[in-house]
Length: 230
Image (tube, rainbow, N blue to C red; front, side, top):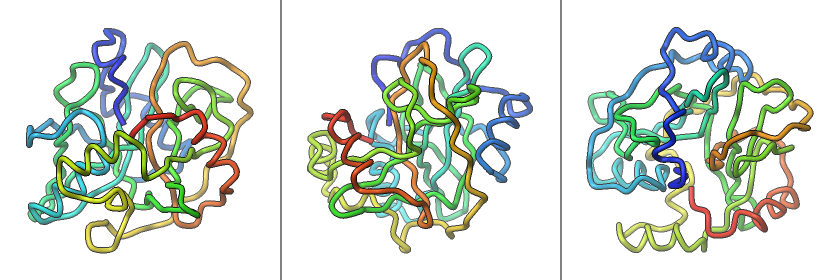
């Protein structure tokens, strides 16, 4: 999901592929796919609701939706937002939602283990991830104790997007028709969360099928996510 309030933040940058912080991020969260820069291709989607946009793109044009992480650099740290891109019928990965911060590309790390699931009426979304010591997760710009947060399918932004493109909120969820093969990389360790992050990056979505989480923890974040989309 994109935080409109930071789209012109001059301190944000697209990391280099060989940057040491990228390796640090991948090691911390057990990611094994090679990072890549993806150029933006305009297909008429807004700069939010990436998961629904790419599902719609795959439904309309063939191919699959691929989950992963979009990495952004801030001084000496990286923030990873869960992000979806389109794998076209020729197996090329393409980003069709406008990148944040005025960029024309993103650094993307594919993660086929990521999936979006529903748990007792709540969509289990994954928090942002960071390279900040002792702060592995963030939600709405603040340290977060959980690797996930909850989103209700009747969220106003989601409903509005679905009405515009003729799809359903449940199309956000991962299904076998439009998903990559699901793998299970090693789980990451939760760090102690006791510091304040000095900037705001909105939470985005990611969940693994074998993840352990509770409805109560999801509902706790639903209460503060408000009208936020994904």
